[in-house]
Image (tube, rainbow, N blue to C red; front, side):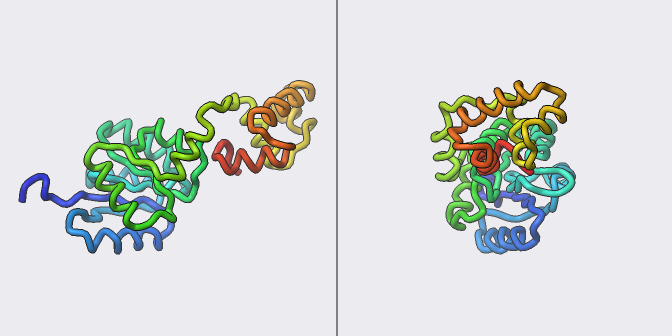
Length: 210
């Protein structure tokens, strides 16, 4: 068997067994790919990657113990040639950007058609990048936005947790006036109507998690 004819060796990382079973079932009927290992969190993903050196890794983002983003950074740090596709339920542009900066070569939503997943695996294995239509649209939509500063992200996270300005000021050891200014900036940058709307946008775009 020539190197080109060797099946694409895949590692599937997801904390939901049903998702891994779905990937296994999908891959099993295609002779050009083979599922060589599975993992249910980021730590297991690193161990399995070291053990199997897969050609392509399918990585969920939200997992217990160690999330997918940290696992991508760790794997890419040890194996710079690793080809990783994020397979997630989240289409937020900030999540997409973080994954790509961490070294992911593809980004797909779990509701993608099976055909799209297979094409993405083959595409990334061939050395190309692949983004789902939704992810590409999210990136394009917010490409020229002013990014929130780390301080503003901290404030937004505390807003989403239900804190008033005074409580936020106490928690961050800053004045209430400072917090009010940051809230104004957040509303402006996110084009939000109010604090609740800002929190919803932050969660949807992956700027914050609760």
